[in-house]
Image (cartoon, rainbow, N blue to C red; front, side, top):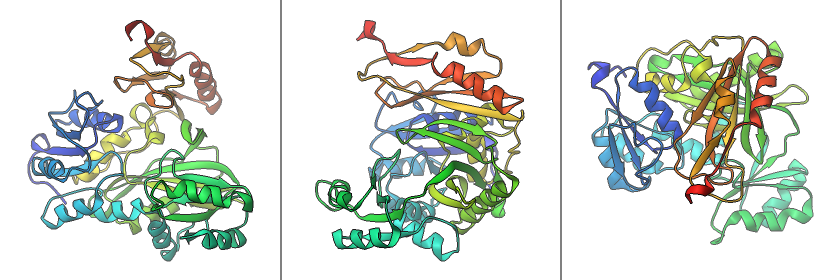
Length: 395
């Protein structure tokens, strides 16, 4: 796909007005691209930057159509949306990237894993679980601990349960099945991994692919807390991770930025854990640290523009998430920004969310440096100094 009109006349429609859309708009505006956003919240992070805001639910088909009709290309900042309707819009001639095919595949983890296995890609062993008898068989075949997952709708650890032994099967099964006992489940072997990686991959016009260096990710309560790049891995592991990312985005026929999260096992295997058909939390460092940020890269890819250079500007970079870590919620007050601005190589980002809540992603800090040790040390120092808490004086 190559657009014949000038870049300045292009409009990108984004389903979702959160921080990922916000950072996408900030990068696209540098090229003169216009943006329309669909979000139910009139004060969502992206709204103040968008040229057009359509107020509506992400699953409201009339509103999605309205967004698509004023956009040259439609994209999205999270995957829990109506992929079936996007397929209908594509059949009418509307351009949507990543495509509904990619989205529908990734929305169903069992379907995704079965497809990837058929294509010969490396991932944990898995089984469909329709009832307790299936779960018992999964335990016998895959062993314990055992990971039980909802096939749809999970994120940040939600929709997953670790079953330590046979006694935990029934409780986990009925908890994940949901109130109406209608959610579909799958069992997956528990991976005792040595490291979690992610590789951000972009696929553009004519199948061109650009990969960012594998990043090392550390989670807290199933939410990404820190990313360091390049990951501290051998040349062999890096080669495996990059080849797996490239193969994944090719078999999915993805267009745009995809993020492939991986496990590195203690025996040196690299296995696919999760796939996100979008820009990703683990790629926020690219705004300051890379020649082309993941957000600009996504815009380039979906508009058929040349993909950008993914090289790091400095040898190492890191990122920490700033989460709402208190029990109460309220209007956000930011503490410790001065310390970030005084630190060489450090950059502060606030997402303009109007309410801080426990565990909510409110911003991030990026650090660049010449050694891994220096980056990690700076991240350690800043992590405890910058807080986003409820402003009690204005509640």
